[in-house]
Length: 104
Image 1 (cartoon, rainbow, N blue to C red):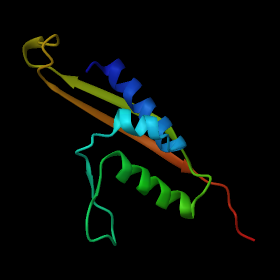
Image 2 (cartoon, one colour; image 1 turned 60 degrees about the vertical axis):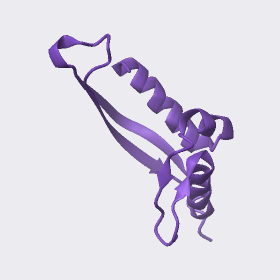
Image 3 (cartoon, rainbow, N blue to C red; image 1 turned 180 degrees about the vertical axis):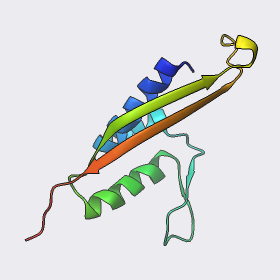
Image 4 (cartoon, rainbow, N blue to C red; image 1 turned 120 degrees about the vertical axis):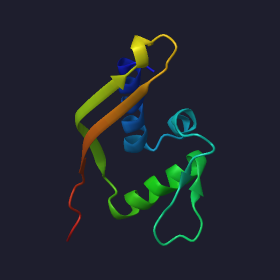
């Protein structure tokens, strides 16, 4: 994937975690993805697993929203071979989470 494509995917992922959209979960999360959650004996899996994790977070922070503060994408391609997709892509992202205070 190109740097621009990676930015688009990360933006879609941020939209997913901010909306908990089931259709975005199906689009972005592999059915083979495994998520290890503290306090759970078995890992959660696939889009349904990630949606459950978002549900847990929203149980404590119902209005939570994530904002990208900075995104850096580095591409290293061996001998300049970009067209064949040979190389390494690193994505660094700084995210801030915001939530309204519901204390009474």
